[in-house]
Length: 221
Image (spheres, rainbow, N blue to C red):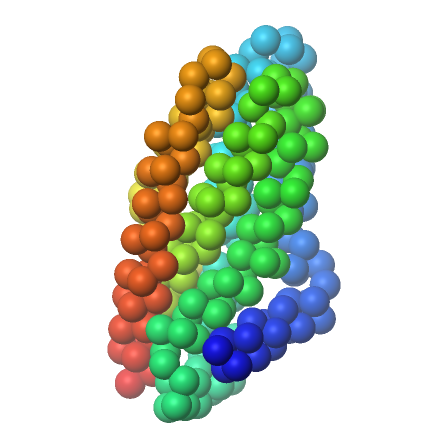
């Protein structure tokens, strides 16, 4: 666990040193969502109807922006080979890097989502469910993204490849996240959709680090 915490701290310090790069995902999220009232018009009913889908889709796209750097910097300077040879389990290393990615990119999206929900005229009844769904769903995005980032190591135009690999796998989280908010807005129970999001997270926690670790070993050999 000490290695796990140390790796998270290392990645957080590196992200903070990069400054603007660390804030790129949330800046994209804010700007992209803010464009929708200009594109579809200021009608409050239309904005309220599309708000859950817009927020989730933009969150998925924002999460993609920093995935190509998840392992690439360590891969280019040779640090990834040392990490693979270190006594720390590689699955734990991947989990730590995914956790750091979520803290830098995913958590700010969760914080910004309610503010942007106001911009899109999201009814008050959907805010709590939106926050809860994104708290459960955004770690899934980071974990699945870690698999895509590991598979794209050493490839040309890795960012495009990661998007092609990862976006189809994001669809279940998108469906259940939007469905949870829609259910809350309709006065129905959002618990089934939140439980399904939780099941995705429970499955991703062991499977994604295992798959990413296998891809990293293949990349450094």
